Length: 237
Image (cartoon, rainbow, N blue to C red; front, side, top):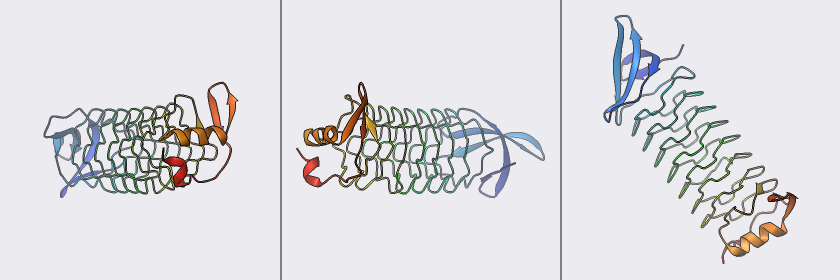
């Protein structure tokens, strides 16, 4: 069984409900029985939440969850704006449709996490592990660089406008329908990545380069066959 620390108060998480603006209401059990605890904005909550805990729709904005064990947690639609999730364990977590705008996800482990439709604008994902993550339809506008590559990530329909992906390893990534307008892909590794005609590249030159370096494996499905980085001249119009 895992524990959630609220300051010096240690409480065992039983269940969680959607929260008011002041924080997330968590049903807990202690020696005196059940009671309600609220995690207010900015609260230090070095936490280990029981795997599978349902925090869907919870208001966790600005909560400090650095190094928290949240693997398998259900955070669908949760408000995690400005949340500190540095080094958090989010393996297999459901973060679909979650608001992670300006969140700190540096070095977070998001292996196999569901981030479909999540708002990741201006999120710091430096060093985050996104291996096997589902990012379909996620908004990654102005996202900070992936220092640990999202190898094999599902980025179908993702909004990657203006994302800094310099030197990123995107091998095996699914980019069908992704919007990469304005994204910096200098020296990015794209071998084995797949894309489609509705993928929006950062420039016409890059779109032409992709056509030359890809094979059409079936109608409207292209697979990049080279492992070359992209020189700056290929990226600008």
